[in-house]
Image (cartoon, rainbow, N blue to C red; front, side, top):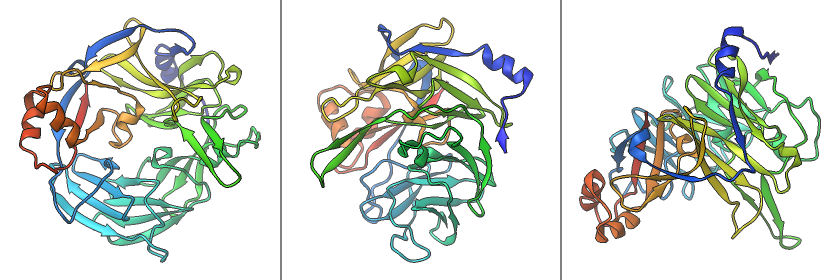
Amino acid sequence: MCLLFSGCSFEKSVENQLIEYNLRASYPSREIKLEEVADIEYLQLEFDDDFLFSVNPDIITTDKIFIGQRSTGDILVFSRNGKPLSKFNHSGNGPEDYINLSNGLLYDDFSDEIYVISGKKIMVYASSGEFKRYIPLLRQPGRTNDIVNYDSNTFLLYDRDFEYDYYNTDQDVVPFVFISKEDGSVVEAIGMPTDKKVPTYVFEQYSATNANVFRGPTNHIVRHNDGYLLTNFSIDTVYFLSAEKKMLPILVRQPNIQSMNPVVYLNSFVEAGGYEFVSVVTVRLENLRLPITYLMRDRKTGSIYRQKITFNDYKGKEVHISPETITNTQDSKLGLIVFGLVELQDANRENKLSGKLKELVENSDEDGNPIYMLLHFK
């Protein structure tokens, strides 16, 4: 059953906020202070020889922090103030195991369940490490930014096969679905316009046996207020799915993405402090990466600028805000930026640090963990 574009009063309020971006325009740079749009909190996880990791957090909630260490298969759980809580490893080929942690983790605060995507299954564990069950999948997501913990009964999922089955032009294929947490079945499909698929990655074939895929961020599902922003990159409109499952357009980009060569796509947005922050990706290989432009739109005036965001505690340092900033927090009002401790120690020796950040760096062990900058968006 497809969701309908409905709801008169809701429709009027969203139409008044319709956002427009011209991706061929040249926008001026504008500098703002990070403190204008967010309250800053610094956090460093305690160093423990039994809780070693080399990757960024998968999940940050109000109570816990979860890290999936890809190289070892360990899942590490810390308290919100950085203290180790539990550690477990179920990597393997057994009925209670996950193949690897390359697709990341999901967490349900209410049920205290950790979800690990493992092939066409979701393995379910308690935060203490106890195996609870597995959920078979008919539709397969790629990474965990293609699936969200929607409510106590369902996940909202973007079907990665829709994107990668490039030569399937079936217009009846539905990329966004709600699936059951019990048996993985499709509960509802979301009615959304589709068009001929456009590439959001560059495939480089070096030889008959050697190839590589280069991609930029593609956040198909982004938390926004009490609902989600849904992006199908084959069309020019971003839709807002409300908590009541009403879906209406909230952003339109131009020119038509089907007409662009190379493709330039807009990767949704994050709202903070009177601005919308977006990332724009050009699907063209430059220095072994796809170039990204970070823009921000003043919600009062509608003016669009290139981001230049600095903050008081780190002289000369620029940061960006985009949907990637909230991927790991599951919260539209909480962003995460990670700084390596070595970088901060070097900056401190050059007298670039001040305030709480300087204090934290100077009190860190020489080989301590990275420092997380949590952004509580205004």
